[in-house]
Length: 400
Image (cartoon, rainbow, N blue to C red; front, side, top):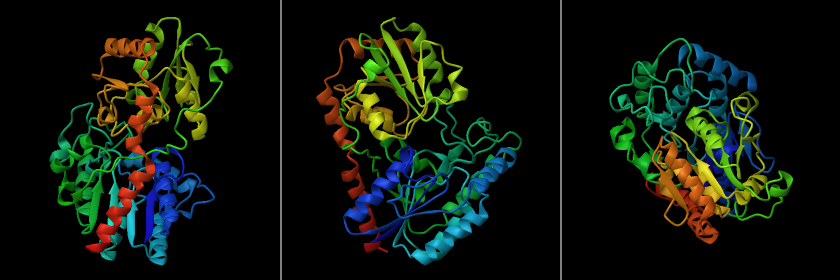
């Protein structure tokens, strides 16, 4: 098979690693692959294609800030992508994250309809069936079930500071996306799958395939981080994110730092310079790392991994921590609870600060068995889950 994947990034971040992991399994099994991506760079060993430029991404973001019409710019980049698809002649087109200021879905889905190439679309959030937002769970909005309008999250990603085109976007996306005839939707969790019947994506077949991780990288890893940061006699409480905004639990991390006993050290990995000034001095705020082996060292060194996210489709960081033998405390948010059982973590109701603090202390004083944590993570072995995608590809081609 010849598979072309489309994602915002390649090789970095959660979706970037998912695409390259799948690419590598395809190549190992004798198939062909190519990844088309919108931002950043790609690993040299991957057959990849960047469709646009930094300037085009910037202009697309600026256009969105004014018009609230993300994914309706980048016409030049998308035409370039379509030419690449026509030349590459893939058997399957696999969409991943198609928001992020790099692609024009009007042009893309028109081509997908005309070409009749079978499409697999992995969902990582809810943007595909809303008029603006990526997540609506926390604010309890259900306009997406009928028609989005007057979006309460207009200033959240993908932020618009002037216009509200949520209704227009919703109607336009519904018409464009549902015009595709040969597409299978792949949510990573039961939580996200349960939303689809109430959305306009209900016309498509769907199947759950969780996002996987590399268990050869994310595993108990020798490190000397306690010595480096002089934490030999303290409990390490770890949070990891690509930025710590309010929906990633910044408020709860600030409260944790203030209320945990003195022999606890909160480490946040993934704090940008702007966010750093909001955290108290008790927090060890470190920048993001794209070095997965370094990330595994931090997970291993921690006594507990904490994820007070307010909206999440799966929570891959939870799974990465488990794979490194570290128990997890997570909010009951989106699909997060699905990766946790009673042997490896605690699920705390969203917004329950006292419950969060109590669970963190309990997990440090009476730690979960590391082998039980690692065993739970085996459910998310990337190779096994990539093979689920290959089975799906074969099934699609057999019935196309």
